Amino acid sequence: YPLSFLEMIRHKYPEALSKKVLSTNDIGMIQHYFSNYLKNGGIPEYVKFEKTEYLKDLLEGILYRDVIARYRIQDEKALKETVYYLASNIGKEFSYTNLAKTVGLSSPHTIANYCNYLEQCYLYFFVCRYSHSLKKQIQYNKKCYMIDPALIRITGFRVSEDRGRLLENIVFLHLRMQTKEIYFHKEKKECDFVLREGNQIVQAIQVTTHLADPEGKNREIEGLIEAMNTYHLREGIVLTENEEDKIEVNGCLISVIPIWKWLLLQ
Picture 1: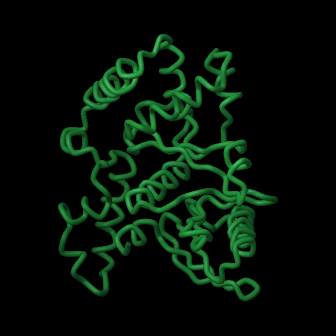
Picture 2: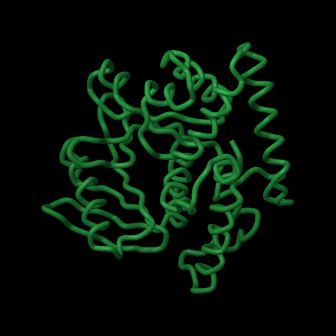
Picture 3: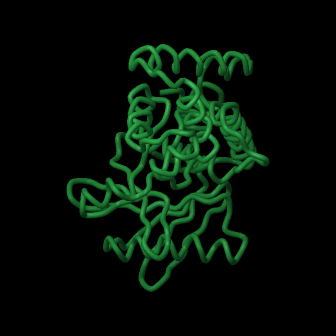
């Protein structure tokens, strides 16, 4: 894995980690480093020199060495288009069938293989919609996340920066580095992450840039509450860019936590 945000702070601003109470200046500095992390990720060589060509060469090397050569991929164009599509749609649902059509392949099975190869070399990770039925899990749409925020930025196509998806990707990577069993929840509403231990879901997490917009707040809270009710959880988490709060809804306690703080607490 690239460097985590905690590792970045240990290197760049270690004094903040020893304090029980952070000053306004400490919080400002950590937020500054978090903005840099959101943009530049944690690949040491890129963080140090910020040369886009290095990331492009790294990506090309991974694709040719670890995927195309290893698995003898014939259709390089379809594989690369798959890589670009996934980077452009971080945290969004997709199906193997629709993705195959998008990149001009006739077989969803080939796309499933591509995704498996990309996960084996730690470039992408795929998350299933949770169901007690393994068969349904396999049939449902997936979501994907990428190994580093900077790689998303240079690989994907987006008209404007989708900050919420990048934040979601950072949260996913943190959970993945902790080897959590990660799913997403979707019934009438959606919840970004539900974590399973043993045979049960033990935590529900929603990620958003902010809760200031009433419509957005209702959507995020309702999705989290639905997941909490479905899996019999009394507490849930909403991770935002900078907001902090406690919200009680029908006996359920929701902790609103800045992502940068959550990353340093884990």
